[in-house]
Length: 361
Image (cartoon, rainbow, N blue to C red):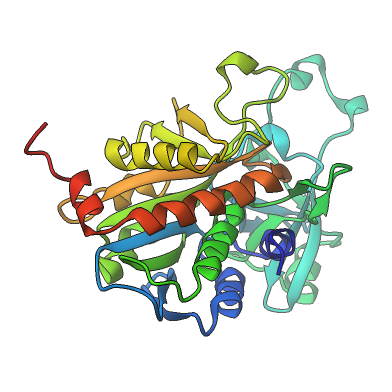
């Protein structure tokens, strides 16, 4: 399966925090026969390579399965749906967007209502509406129809209704949930391409749950692996569109994977990050260096596991992250897979030990 086809399946799948089952199914289908599957009690899936692996060091390739979404909080007497956010949305991006509500009776399409410009006061035009003031129109006449005929109930999960599609340049594709379905796809393709290759380590691909609501699966999954090294694969916000100074850009589409040196939640292991940079340079893989002033990844908790885990964050840039539709470059996707494969091949016992050997520093 091509990277584009796999990414399309992952992007179109339904999977807000707490409802990542479709993503687990895709991972199992794509890696079935190649890995042994296990699960933490929150639903994170651990994919341990069956063959060609040493017993140690233990390498964790982590990508979160969940996407930004919502949960039904209430149904008004008029039949409109009120939402609570699952993850960090900018409400400005939500009005007039389509969503899917997953109910026990099946999926229900809806539209986040927006007041026509004809009815807006000058003050309203200047404000960003809060989510608590928004509603979803599912075409129900009243609360009874929404609840009984459509099957909508409080606690149902909701995601954007966005279909994956290539742009005119077929290497640029648009869709939802590239944060972090792109990372999940990269994890799958990395393990698949390693195949039965003899490696100086044991590799575990991990699809974590509930990253968007507090990196929760990243807290529990390492308990089943006890990794020596963790590489977190993310879909990071791109900064190459109008409004960003390009000379200062750290995440341009087509410029390769982004190697993160800092964010407010994690200072990645400098020696491991330098290995990523050196490996990219040695293999001619385009790459970008990032120092982030905001945001966090699963590394925020993984690197604190037990006595500490040498961790790095490698990302694919995503335009319009944390909105209904994003854009990624498939060249960046492929280059990230190449970088991870080359790095994994180098992670032998001696190299991994050097990441936490602080006697000479």
